[in-house]
Image (tube, rainbow, N blue to C red; front, side, top):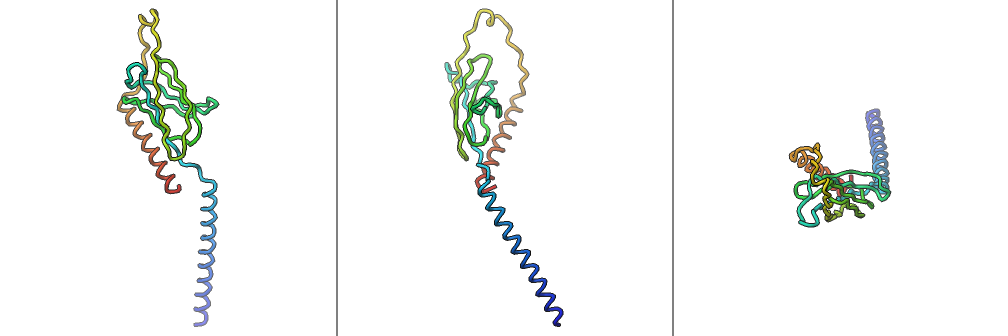
Length: 169
């Protein structure tokens, strides 16, 4: 009977030692993540409209760049003129280009768990007599159902990132 009790207390000691070490390791891991955690993403929303009519501009390309003009991502506004994307917090330069409108550039600051909304009014380019008679270029554009699905996926990913950021992952 003496053998069983010493074996049992040895087993208890080993289990207690493993539990203590894993507890200390878990605490250290949590502390490191607290100090090195990436900031929660913010959301950038671009509202692209025609300056003369205030109607949404379709097929515009919204380029999100760093202040040093390094491209981060591109977005395409939907039928409502809205383009949105989750991005890392920081300063950005947003440029909107469209063949029928003048280019527009704006700077914006995106904050963690926040939404930076830009209202971009595009001015129409004046038509010259040569371009008025020329055929418009053909565009290889995805169907609107595909665009809507891609935007829905982008919104879902952004929402998922914000949720994970809020609960500490």
